[in-house]
Length: 197
Image 1 (cartoon, rainbow, N blue to C red):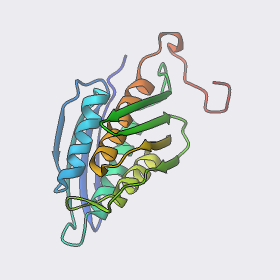
Image 2: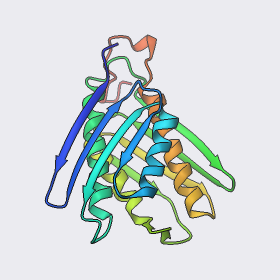
Image 3: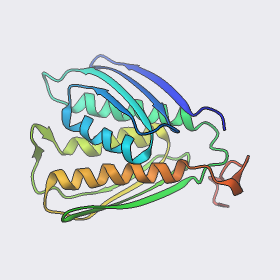
């Protein structure tokens, strides 16, 4: 299998983001974004997805974390799209249920070539530490739009905001891992996005 790696730089008036990924890594994460809670969540994606992630970002955090979080999602989405390439031989679909104490989340992903997000998570509070929970949906929307995937995220139950977020990101990592796995029966075949597979 060819190397499935990518490195993307994104520069805007508000942010400068670099994301490097290896889809066949060992789960290593290296982060310097100025948004510690997001780094904690991205580390879960790396560990549970067995994806090496290196994300460096500088943004207008003196205003708030919105642009930085959204642009990290966009940049990672672009990197995934590049690293996946023509999708030959992958499973295409992935799903995972992950619990953490009282919380349980389900994530289902399709490397469909079409962006679509269904995000259903009710948090009991608006902030986790200094982090605005609304930004989690912004992260996933940016990712979906640029990775060109269909992503369904459902928190099925939960009372602790941190646990809810963590189950979502762990399940996201696990779903990515399944969808991106080599499928021997699909060797050399690009999964259809027109409905036949």
